[in-house]
Image 1: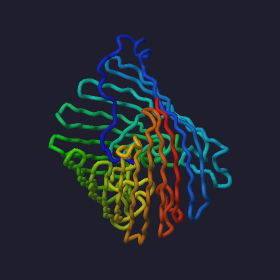
Image 2 (image 1 turned 180 degrees about the vertical axis):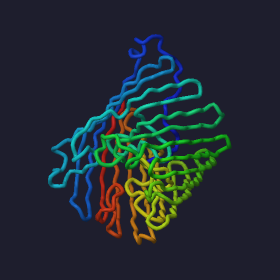
Image 3 (image 1 turned 180 degrees about the horizontal axis):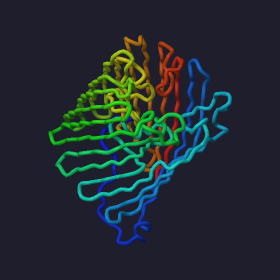
Image 4 (image 1 turned 90 degrees about the vertical axis):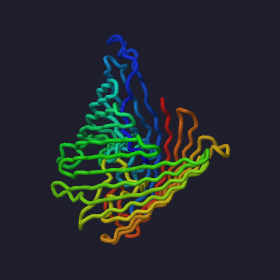
Length: 399
């Protein structure tokens, strides 16, 4: 889950290596070792489960003349003894590649140039902007083949532009480890955005996406934050998006959303609402990742419905105030309803996170999806399903 719309790019380097030898000798190795187990109890289809060990191994050179190179290998190794049989339909595909095989691929490979207020990154990289984000919810984050530039020379303002051609990862569809086009036959997406925080307690964002052979997207949001007392805050969010279809893609319509989050001490309570307006047979999309909408769920997407109304209520507790340091609990209830499709579904998300050390953390995630029309499939398909319960455990070690 993620609410942020900030672009994740390298910060400006302060020091440069003095020689080519120093570029590689002073480089940085980093990564993550992750173990994940998933068990899905389907109300209609065969139950599935799977277990994997994998992670990311990344190397980034020291800067030389403001240039850096980075490369990251992503891998997921299936543990056969703790994974269902593929031929019997018992293997859960979420942690693996095609036909639930183990995989390894180069998820990041980029050239980064940073000087003064400008950062340019070209190649395979991590991006977190509306309609294109990492959405790290299984074994690895989504990554993108792109050229992205950001300029922060205007006070409290970031200007972002770029071109995204392909992507890989859990949200990209079948065969997670293969980089795919942004849409069938598409050459990619032009991206232009601006973020401004010059007004007290207000953040404004505006974006345009020109996705070849799919849709033009115009998106904007505003966030107002008010603090009161020493431990209280109120956050108000509003958003609008317009989709103009291309090549009869059926991605067309409007959507708006409003949300409020109230924090008091260890507790945060939230309520969100999204409404989409579409002509017959048209629909909006979440984009390439989790999407920017205020209603933020683990499984069901707004993409699955036409003219959808979505309500969400959530609560989060930071248990540090009762001596359970570094434990966070989150719960949400979301309801999806479409009058034109005569469809309805709801989702319950329960999440517990434990930060064991600075390097080691664990997450337990339980989701209940109730498809009252028995027509929602997994991951945005419309196969006959009937809903499911999904249990996920992830243990991460970062170095």
